[in-house]
Length: 332
Image (cartoon, rainbow, N blue to C red):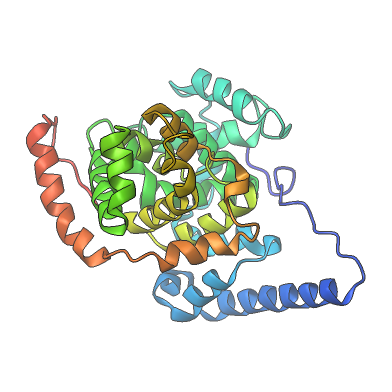
């Protein structure tokens, strides 16, 4: 059932010792927090994605103390919220996938007691969502995404943030009729060929890694098992701001750039299975210690987004020709 306090779990508070360096860090953190609170008061949530000021703030960073509130703001989740609806959805109880959802929660979140509970917020959130959107197919990736949202924000806020993530990024991947993942994987393959042809040839030709499987492991889970927690939060900060596939491509290309020494070394990376496993869940030490650097790397990637948008309609047509769809699917 929804709760306003008991389900709130935020990142552990940072203990700051009394030193000039830490005092400076604490002051910068306080200033950034203040900027966010001011920006959210002055810029309507519905206008956030078009605001240069908000974009700059996202790239500068979101303090852990306000991250859940900012995610709610960036996705305009309050604008989607219908008072009382979440509680009514929760009262409906089990859905067809409830047993599968519960097994996945136990598997993924055994270290989080409040989530690993048959009557807990994660079970309630996912059941409520599939009551509301029954044409979406459940996949264990969704328990990973919903669980991570719940680690940042109270239950009902987490529900509406999850709804926004599904609408903006994920729902097309889990529709029984859409071919969005196939389309995005083909576009990502083209993006990597443009970004670095040598590593694209190594991955997709020499090692025979499937772009579809690579994007499935990344995009369906929004990198939730690929990145360390602090890096994942910073990555999701920008995912919350941008609603289109290129932001996922940028993050994927950044991960490949960090993994390149392994992928391009035939003595270490010998098979496609090894490459796929490594890219799906790389060792944490390949990433820079500062989570901001993964965002900086992703945003500095030379990605011709306009060309990808033009290419999308052609790729959609090719996929449709190869697929027999029960009805016309809508792609972003």
